[in-house]
Length: 284
Length: 284
Image 1 (cartoon, each protein chain N blue to C red):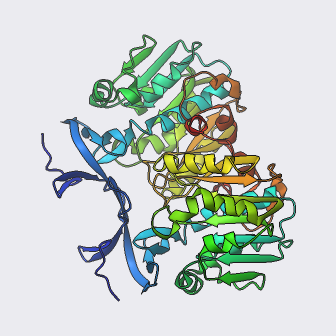
Image 2: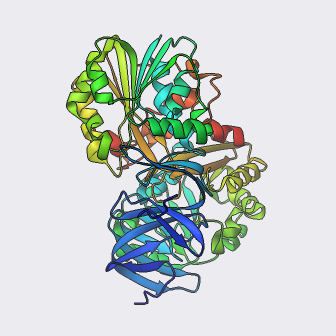
């Protein structure tokens, strides 16, 4: 195990992970144990056991999801659009290597087919084996794993999906292309005539420029656009934004999320998540 | 200026503040400049200019409020109860040394008298002079500053206030007593027959025990109790809880917050903030 990484350090005998994504803010987590540590062709993949957030998926030194709060992001990016589309049968997930989004979407019986296009097979393997709280050790026959470039895959599809969920990491490194105009255009083409897309559109505080750009680009393509927020404690600043672009449907039917065994989402959250703080409304 | 403090360090020529409140999580802010640095009889009071959050009030090494996100906490603890009480004329603020809560409450013309009881005069002086984005250099004749122990002050009052806002720091050190049963009892007695109180009830993630205890204690005293949340980026985990205990009124009249020059609060936020994530509902 190679602990000689810039984001790992030892202090008084304890191992610490320090996220190095921001120049002016550093968050450090005390680590109990290194569970998994491999280099894929894309990135450095680790599963660390932390004191506060238990097991965490860490890519190139940045926390992506944890046993303690990973469900918040995965539930919010899945159940909110699932409550809006009246009958999503064919779903495409781009990214989502921790399998949490596929796990949430698979809770809906009406879903017949889920394509999950993740560029890094190692992430999926690591999370299925070592991060069961997030991945649920997903083994649903409706989920089809495709280990490929999500941009290329989406561009090859025409009017095929009811719902596309873009579960990307931050717009640096491999995920940068998932925030570009041409990518949103190909999603629009890959969707059926009443299809819809959702993406994580970053922090309204730390990446307001990315958030505004995503909203603007999606607004230029889809007649119905809505932003919503949730709080993800292990993302900087906590507050996180999601943007829906829809060809037709936009009103949530909150009762659809009932009895879905969720820990963050419920009917009131699905309805209230679209109430944006004043500073975000003014940005858009 | 004494920079020989355990929570300040230099790295490659840069000054960093590292909050040392949690054993397993450390947040570090890169600091441009030390604006103010004094020791009061209660605590170590600093105003630091940071890169991400501009000026920050730091007490004993813990960030209390900042120029960038301080308004979120101050608006949420003020405007939500102000929208519920139909005619709050006399308001008591316990703590609130940064003056942000008093500034928000003073935006309501119907308010005739605000008592602000802060134990540390130095905090008020520092914030009025060096943290104008939060304090607004508050100089409203309706605001009466009382530099005293909030517990003792509240215990001396009977049926006097329409609204009491407890703007405390964390339940360690001087603020510990502001989370105790006997304190909530004295607030109940200090309120008029249709009065209400609100307090910050800590993080549902990092201090779930304190949050549940506050909710339970307040529920035992007031017929109407409601919890709401907001996202405060400089508080650990981002998600923060507030608890209202009311003798009578409990339904917000959201239109009251209109045109109050707020940056986070608006009518939709006042109505949606009571929609709690499923894990909090299950805790209560």
